View (cartoon, rainbow, N blue to C red):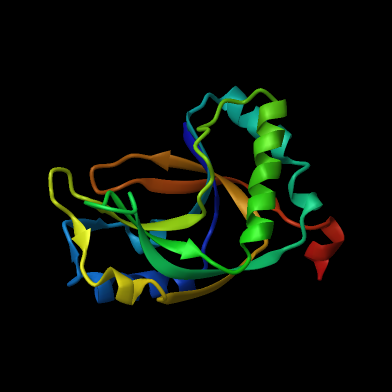
Length: 190
């Protein structure tokens, strides 16, 4: 299975992303929009893993969630990768709540490394991908400075998920394989 770890979004945020994409559409040349329902905040990407490695991932991460209390993040500001020139990825950034998010990602990183599980080692840059450049286009976001403070809303982070990605001609299909709750089991009963 093709696997990754992510923080899921609420239905309300998915709707806000659709609205944002429509708003940006006339200023974004050569951008193929990510289906709003597929938007998520990626923590780690594994690529193809066997069932036994997936089980090993679940075992390694079982101890991570209880170490963290749920926290909130603010999804705000439009940016692009690379930061200059033709864009490859159009994203919404994380402003408030970045410290606990980075601490969670670091704890996940260490747990996976201790369990000797292979994963993509790119440095963590918290963002939601909302669009990608079409190959060969000179893609860009016009009036980008006007969009830097667009506020998508806040998200209460209470879990992260092991996801399966099945690539299809119409776009990937994501399925939650395992949820990892933040906080102690007593917190979940409230």
